[in-house]
Image 1: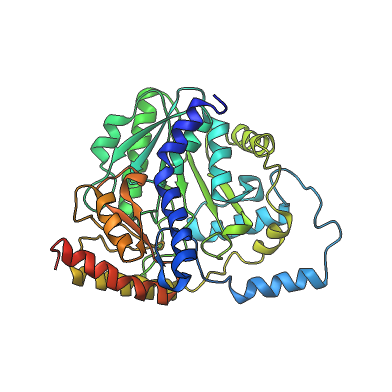
Image 2: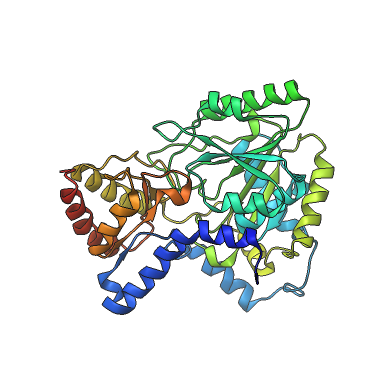
Length: 395
């Protein structure tokens, strides 16, 4: 075998999403990009805010001495301090730069955290539907993923979570606003999670980390406010990026934030900094650290995303699709009118509309639509979605 059995197996598991992406590119080459309505990939089409370009221009015209050199593996102190100041205003606990590690996006951050905390065979709980790569990241570092179901509104079932926690449970990952559903966990829900983890820690005499993936934290609709995890569980770690809130996915810039009162805080921070280096990230991109330190209170137009959400949601409901209305992020997760959602997506593809099977997110029978696309792409997809709805007698 030229590659490992484990990698071969995980490549096969991830092949559906990759196949949709590849087929989309082939269709675009064959028919023209304007005739293909690709809703499969969460790659935002919005440009970064104007403030980003102003700061970029300022640095280009008046570069700082040594601004492209190595720095501390945790990142520039001024960037970490800027993040800490922003978090302190948002979340309650007082953060300082020594609670923050700058990372290569949320994916890099999560891998650093899992590398730092996991012993071989220890368990990490995720809630289905979940971002597919969680399983790969956990496996990367010798952990075991335990999948816990959610209810019809895609909220965690606390009784199922309690039953799933064992002495080997090292962490629970939550993702709110959620990819692929767009669901936002309420403060009551996060409070209940925190109390349950605290109870289980006392029962088993262990530490259970609550890892909150907050890549979409600033993309929330209808006037809702994001409830931070830190007030509800001291063993909390946030991983996030500026891929979505600043529309910088290709720049790979994010951070880890550790609760200032986390048990064994200094040991954990030292481990995170060490793993940031030894996993090969070394440090987050220097230029991006300089930029985002000035942009902690800047976000792309959330109103634009809400407008796209409202357009797509109202049309899907009109056609008869069953879908939970997203409260954030830029995804919808409708129920498939067929038990096998791949069969339904094959029908959609006949109308040049591309989406992703729910089985790719651990929840068969659903499909994911990404609406972070041009308006003309959303508008063009409506006809195909409606024809498929009629064929399967939704309307």
